[in-house]
Image (cartoon, rainbow, N blue to C red; front, top):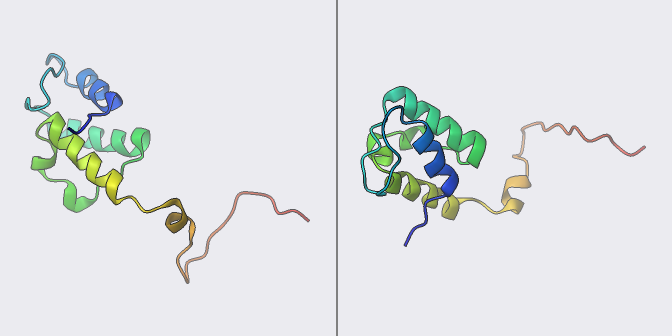
Length: 101
C-alpha cells in the first residue's frame, strides 16, 4: 500500500479553507486553481518534487491518493545522484565554492 507523506497531508489539511481535514485518501480535495498552483509550488519547494507541465491535469490532484501516486512515480523515476551531478555538454556551469590556490 502506498504511503501518503505526512507533510503533504498536513499541508493540504491546513490549506483547504473552511473544509475539514482529510480523513479518507479517496475523498475529493476540492482545490480551486489557486490552491492547485500553491500545492504544486509546495511540492517543489518543500518536498523537492517537480511537477512537469504535462502532469498538471485535474486527475492527478483530485484526491490525496492521486497526489500520493504522482509523488510515488516521481520518487521511482528520479535519476541517481551520479546522473544528476554530471553537467550537460555545451552548457557552462558555475561553482560557488572557492578554488584552492
